[in-house]
Each structure stands twice: as structure tokens, then as C-alpha cells.
Image 1 (cartoon, rainbow, N blue to C red):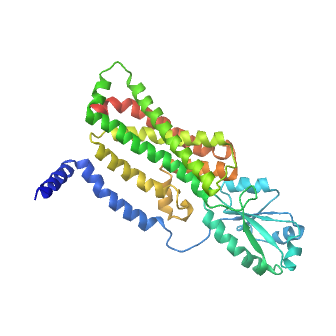
Image 2: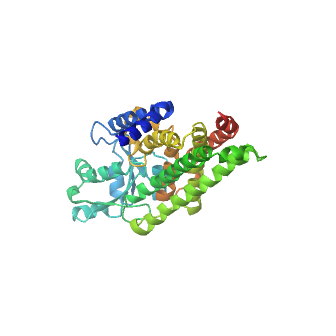
Image 3: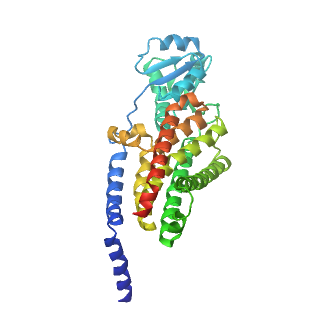
Length: 356
């Protein structure tokens, strides 16, 4: 009986907290809607173009008659990689010298580089290439060997696609949990009130929170990177400094939003429920686990509302394709906009939110 009384006491606390109650109800609804719409309903339909870089003269002659809506031929491997970075093609195929001659001898092989934004499409297209060659009347095309590779020519590693997204996810999740604990816990303990009556500038308080949570998020993301390299063979094709900068920027882009949310509630539990309701859908909608291109069209529009989408996309392009800032400038600009606007808003509203 006493246990039931304790349970009722906790339930009454939940019922009195309208914010926490509302988000507790919204969370399962959002989760079920998300799971119902996030997956494609029409199977494995492949859209987009296939890029070819061929060193075989006879193959080049044959592809001249191929429909431009499906196939794009590039003059160098660098052009092919740049097209992948710009999402102009869904997959890149490298045709070696003497390909047509080797095809007649059942020794032909083609290398396929999946687009890091949708490696599943690359894997599916790789399986379709022999049939495509046969349709084009390529000799012995059924015996063509298809090799999935990375940009550097090494064997394709699916963890190369997963690691950048997980790094961005861990950094942002660390921020959301850290802010919920940092701000609301201090309000519950009363230490925030003591901090607010000191002559410390409110902007300094916000900056301090930002620096602490950024450091926490980046360190945890780097731990993920270290484990990925040591245990799963993940490689970084681009600059490690660009990777680090993107991690910092991705973490920073979410902190202002987190400060505004956690400062507006008084209980740590409520803050954590709200942050979970926001971050959980973001993990699935942002292409961390599932390619955005495979989601329904209206879900794709939702995906580009979250900063995690841009952080994961930029990290993948740098880590897997080795591109520079010119290919991720849109992602960087959007992340900077998220960071600056949300941080300024958090600084201006921090005192009012804390006093409410």
C-alpha cells in the first residue's frame, strides 16, 4: 500500500508538470509517426545518375550512345569524386584499361565508389552493373566482377559511412544531456540564483556554458573516431583539422537551442524529456543511420531543419571523399547560421528565462 502511495505521489508530480506531461505524450506519438514514414514504401527504387570514369577506349565509344539521363562520363577520377561530393551522381564506377578485352576472357572487373550520402544505393547499383552491361550487349558481361572501393582504392567499408554521422550525433547528444543537467540542476540546487546575483556578465555565463559543452561533445566524438579507426578500420581521406573544425561547429550549432530550451524549464527531468523529444527524431531524420534520399519527400524537407543533417553531411564528404571547404560551404554556412543565431538568442533571453 505504501508503494502505491509513493507511485501516486510521483504520478501527481507528472500531472502537475504540464510541460513534461505534454512532451511525455508527444514523444511516443512522434516516434511512431517517424518509424511509419521514415522508411521507403516502394522497395529499392534507385534514382539519380551513374558516373563513369573509363580508361578503356572501346568502352568510351560504347557509352557515347548511352542515355544522358542515366550515365555521365568523366575525364578523370578527380572529376568523378568531385561529382560524388556535389551529389551530382548516385554512384561512381571506374573502368580499367583493357576492360572490354578482359570481359571476353571472363576476367573483367569494375570498381564502384558509393556516394557517402547513400551507400546503400551504391551497393544496389553495383549488383546491377553486370545486367546493365548485358543489356548494352557487352561480351561476357554476366561474369564481370564488381568491387566496392573507397576513394583511395581500398575495399569499401560501411563503417566509413556510419562513423561521421555517429560522431556528429554523439557530440550533439552530449550537449543536450549536459545542458539539461548543468542548467536545470543548478536551478534546483539554487546555485544558479547565486551566480545570477554576482557581477558576472550574463553573456559570460552563456559563453562559459557553450565552451564547456562544446569541449565535452568534441572529446566524446573524438573517442568515437578513435574506436572506429582502431576496431573498424575507418579512414579519414580529408584533413583531420577540417574534421575537428566541423565537429566543433556542429556541436556549437546546437548549444544555443539547448540553452534556450533548458533555461525555460525548472526541473531537470522535464528538461531531459524535452531534449529527448527533440533529439530522438533528429537522429533518424538527419541521415545518421538511414540515407535521406530514401525517405519520403516530405520527410526530406523535415530533415533539413536540423543542424545534425548538415554536420553529418559535411563530415562524410571530408572523411570519405577527402574534399575541401569548397564542397561543404553550404553545410558550413548553415551550421554557422544555426550557431550564431541561437547563441545570440540564448544570450539575450538567458536572464529572463532563468528568472521566470
